[in-house]
Length: 94
Ligand SMILES: [Zn+2]
Image (cartoon, rainbow, N blue to C red; front, top):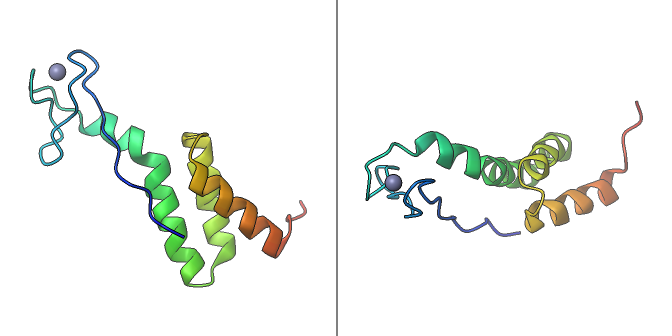
């Protein structure tokens, strides 16, 4: 299990990646923090899910992973981990 690497969030207007520190566009100074949070939401949930898995909390991890893949359907590590947990604990009924 590995944490996913950071991703670049480009400014919608300039297509320049947001500055990692200020979360602003280096070109037009637009505040891209909300966009970055949105873009990262799935990965934040995934990384949090990893912590739950390490703590043995599969149920909590699965909730976060389901949210992660809803937010970023192509997030492969989250899909893999979700499949792994589902195989381990089974599908809940109801
Ligand atoms: Zn810009």
